Amino acid sequence: MLPLVETGEELEEVVHDEALLRPAVADLCERLGLHPKPLVRFYEGSLPVYSVGASNVVKLFPAFEKVQAMREERVLSHLYGKLPVPTPQLYSAGAYKNGWYFVHMSRLPGESLAGAWPRIPAAEQDRIVTEAGELLAELHSLDPAPLATSLGPSDWGMFVDMQRANAVALQREAGLPEPWLEQIPWFLGSVPLAAPPRRVLLHTEFHRQHLTVDPDGWRLTGLFDFEPAMIGDPAYDFVGVGLYVSCGQPQLLKRFYEAYGRPPFDPHKLMAYTLLHVYSNLPGYMRAMPKPPEPTLDALAETWFGMG
Image 1 (tube, rainbow, N blue to C red):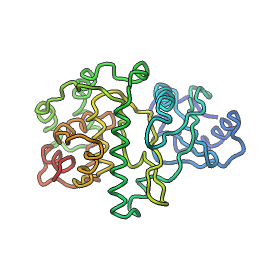
Image 2 (tube, one colour; image 1 turned 90 degrees about the vertical axis):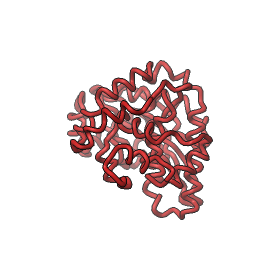
Image 3 (cartoon, one colour; image 1 turned 60 degrees about the vertical axis):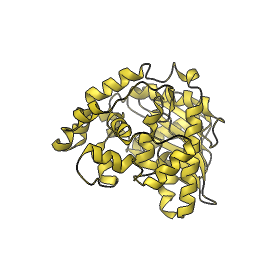
Image 4 (cartoon, rainbow, N blue to C red; image 1 turned 180 degrees about the vertical axis):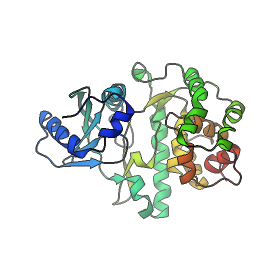
């Protein structure tokens, strides 16, 4: 069965070991009354996630991510039925064995928007981006107070300061070249990040990868993956929007803002939050996103988050 996993390095050794994981998931499913049903692994993401038959999903969390498991459980319970697009229904959650935790939820209909995107006609892509903007606006309109004891940070300004202090080290670890690293302290110092007038429930990874779509008519059918949810500045969620929904295409970003119902955020603010994001990986973004006209963070801000 599954070994105790207490670090990210230990998780890396286990997460792709199907010979180890699959029997454990089958055992868990039997305990949940889901056996026997076909198990299909979802390989996206950093945690073991399986569909169980046509309508169930089981997600496993190692011991050191117990908080994330409890966070996903609480957010799923809070959100179900409140958004214009479905979110997974929570069926059960709790401890499994050797420090592992699980979340058992419903499977959303449709397929990954990220995988389907190249097949979607341009007019339908535009409409999906509109739907996505309306969806994020609805998420941000919900009262986050019922989740305040489960989601952080308790002090947004302190969170920003901590991320700022670690920003250079984080990007150095990701492999960002020195000429870019040297720009980070000055750039972050030049961008005011005042306390937001209203803190909202943040998905934090609002990506095509976490949206599902029905290929019969190309409509959004779901939003999932709430383990990294937070409460904070609405602009923080627009990092994922710019990088993974509009993907550096100004016309799509403009459409998203119009659907969301607000003027565009300052591109430099979104670039600052890109550097401060919990999962920030600037070298990875630079490989996937449009190249700036010059090698500066100012140019990156305008290229990725500007209106053109």
